[in-house]
Image (cartoon, rainbow, N blue to C red; front, top):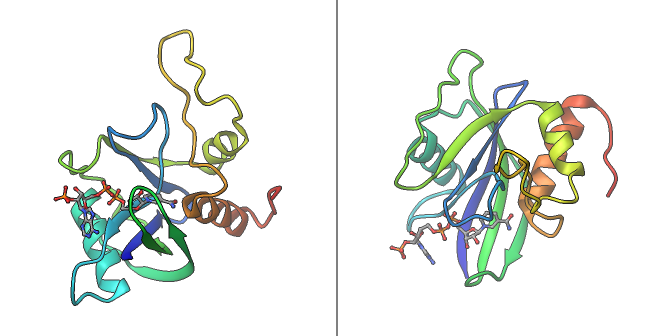
Length: 155
Ligand SMILES: NC(=O)C1=CN([C@@H]2O[C@H](COP(=O)(O)OP(=O)(O)OC[C@H]3O[C@@H](n4cnc5c(N)ncnc54)[C@H](OP(=O)(O)O)[C@@H]3O)[C@@H](O)[C@H]2O)C=CC1
């Protein structure tokens, strides 16, 4: 089983979500990546965030873990991370990601409530949506909303 870090990066008011070209249309998730041999979880998170979006982590907090069977067994190690408020400019690594962006609470709450993500909009675009409840990414995103708005979301 391979260890994978998955990190929800926040700047205090927004969270950073990204998508790979292999993701279903419109879906964004937290940043994920395999740990290298000899790395601690903290080192893997800092490296992955720097490699994928060019940001430096200021604070890191462990959240939870999950066995993820797709496509091969991984141990997902989920963390929240914050960057310094003045250092939020994203440099997307297009070899690894198709897109990455900061999202507000309101945008994230709307996406969490979305129950028809596969419906194409009139302009041809797909709506912004988030991984399903069974994915630890969903749990991380909900925790961030609850922590920063001091309110609880439906399970
Ligand atoms: N539960 C959740 O909420 C989420 C789970 N995930 C899971 O996390 C895992 C990692 O995500 P992500 O980085 O986006 O994955 P990718 O599947 O995009 O893999 C990234 C790269 O890692 C390499 N790789 C594949 N397997 C291993 C391994 N066992 N050890 C080291 N490197 C490997 C591959 O390189 P090469 O082609 O050279 O082998 C691949 O190009 C995936 O299994 C994904 O399903 C991701 C997001 C959310």
